[in-house]
Length: 158
Image 1 (cartoon, rainbow, N blue to C red):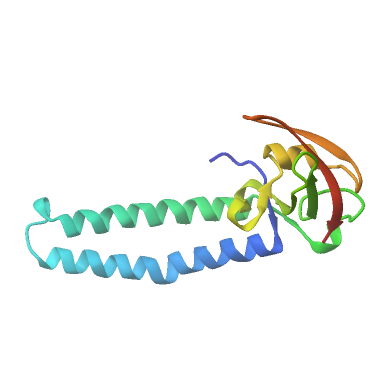
Image 2 (image 1 turned 90 degrees about the vertical axis):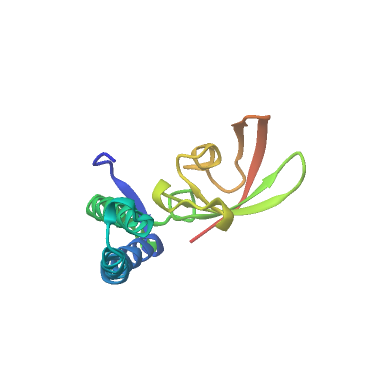
């Protein structure tokens, strides 16, 4: 991961900090205990419990490094920074699919925070890119693999 700026909302920052704390204070201890127990079984050259624990330890340490780097390079979007006149990172945007008349609400977040299952879409996603900087009432075209979707921006909130 490069030293690219990571854009986070306050919620996103809190979640990353909590994950990092959990990895450092809980998960590291758990895996160290698993390694200790596995070593107690004797020969570690053919010990799958030992191998599994060492692999988990490597994953945890890699994730700790990644999270620390993300937090170091984070730019936090505060609620006060969110403009309700134009779509920006942190905005909650209601859009309507003009063909099917479906309405959806998305929160625009940085890539580190995106979670489509929670309707949190990245500012770099096709929809996020298309609506960023637009105003209430604007119609945008989004290129998707199936073609072009037209969305009308119905509302912008914090």
